[in-house]
Image (cartoon, rainbow, N blue to C red; front, side, top):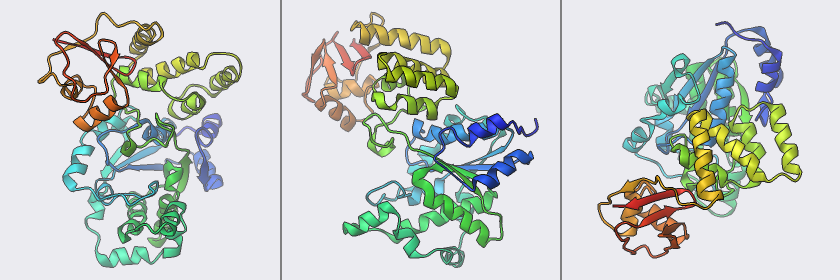
Length: 393
């Protein structure tokens, strides 16, 4: 398949879910030329799950891929250990190699829910970053001033507040920028929080006598609590979630985010989204549009049939407040509530289970239980949130 120069698709590529393009004129000309571009995205495996916030640039990669361009997907196994502080108000701790390796185990499979990974070029950045010498790092560092780094809002804020900023954090943009040198990126995609790191790629490509990459930046999406979606805050909708979890989480989103989610994490046509926006501004119940959003996202990662089933399940258990007759059963290893939640798959750890209980998110036989030491009787129905049920056997 050749390179598509369809102007309508190019216009949408450069506008839909895009906050800034550098250099837009240059990138537009290259897209119109029919030349195959190398389009890069790197993701640090700081969590085992890729969430919908990461799906935003992955979908933009797919847009490039569908025009015929070469996607270069980088798993940041080296940079994941070092830690990017771009969106953090405090120092991100270093991770160990084993944790990062374990987190990255299924990243290609997860990315494959969006990209045609068979047509991608896939790398781990330890391939080249492990080999760098102090002399080479010093050469790269000389291309930047400390003033450039500390002028960033989150860094200057931390310094003014007397918080520690490690030299390690200063070096991270060099590593991400050097990735662009190594893979000869023509374009890099990423969130607005990555602006400094993305620009570092342009500088280092010039240092190594290469042509500076263009940049396509996407806005960030909010998570379930209204803050930026982040694995460290646990407010994520993950590509690894079950269809039921995914549908239920989307239905719990604030109404203000419906249109933004349609724009950024689906590929529903823009005129259709505009019609939803008008309906939301009118008298229609936002829940009706949110159901359409939940179905669209579940359809993307599962199927239309599954999306229909989850809509029906949600209507019965939430809208009609019915306890499902076909709920799963579980025989827990112990009958204390913490263990029951973990064995039922409702919590990932005792800490996670305890938080859910203390926040009033668990019912036993229809009654809210806030005591983590509660013993669940045999045959009881345990409910987490509004749509998750299990019966103990």
